[in-house]
Length: 111
Length: 116
Image (tube, rainbow over all chains, first blue to last red):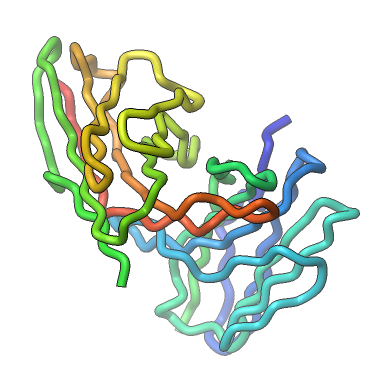
């Protein structure tokens, strides 16, 4: 079982819709969770970090964390063509320098 | 803004050559990391360093070594390049982790290495 698993994708959504990305992790000791966006040919850039159960909103992005069920999700509201990218979920244990990454979900927003 | 730079965007080397990839960060981060990224396999950690002259193996260290002589600089070395090391190499840096949380990693632009 992979440490971090994401929807295989690709995920295609119409402009203005909500894109929903899911990520599950196997290590119950995980405490820090990150979503990165990676455009084709570019390096990952942080969208959001979340450390506590519940929702965290930042603009059109909402991260949801449920440690009991070991999943973290990312919602993109009012999706725009500029949101077309691969989204990487990353997870870390407390007091650990290292991140474990999922393979990523590719999102395409149709104009 | 955090800035992580890598010495080359594209690099072409021959099998058996010694290859140096350099990474520099300007945010006084304690931690630095080297990853490789391959289609379908995601990001895999090669080595990381939590202090000058300190290094730890990641998930796939075979065929690689690293050097960190200064806090801001972290080098990845391929002692004898092989075709299966053709990949995108990404450097990242972060502050030292807190007791209950891991700090964000910031990535450089990447080096696409091709070994012929």
